[in-house]
Image 1 (cartoon, rainbow, N blue to C red):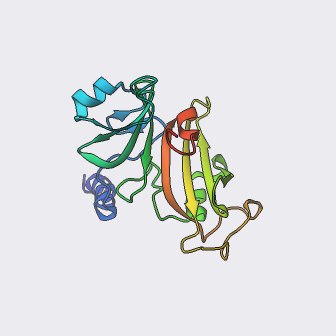
Image 2 (cartoon, helix red, strand yellow):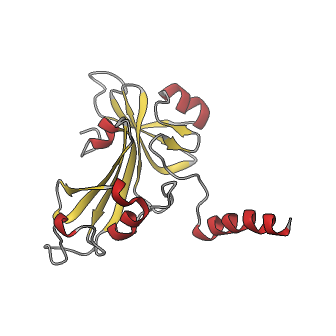
Length: 188
């Protein structure tokens, strides 16, 4: 019985030390926040409020951002009235596997291994990368955006052919349905 208690309390203590209080982000959500939830579900269950509606003249919630008071640092992208992606840009959250803001590409790669694909960052050139995970059915995606901190001119930049860089760090990540997760500039 003593071994069982140690086995159970050790992971709980590790979570407390890392500051993790919420379950990690997955392809399909974060805890009770689930990809595919309607706006009305988010409002009734979490008190979600509209932050920004990109195209109200076309259709309400065609692409919009909502916030949840309990999770103010999450970006919730609504696409056609349903949650399409969850965005993280603070160290308040991590993935279920433990990847988080500030980790190097090498560390994220060590977590996901050959499952992760590296792509060029659309704006940062060699100073940044996209680390991309796709679900087996290709319906869902997770993207980690990385950047070399304090790199003002490619001084620490690296080409993708060299593999993950120890200098580039995760500055944001997002997960959800493949198409909305692939949008480069949010709703824009």
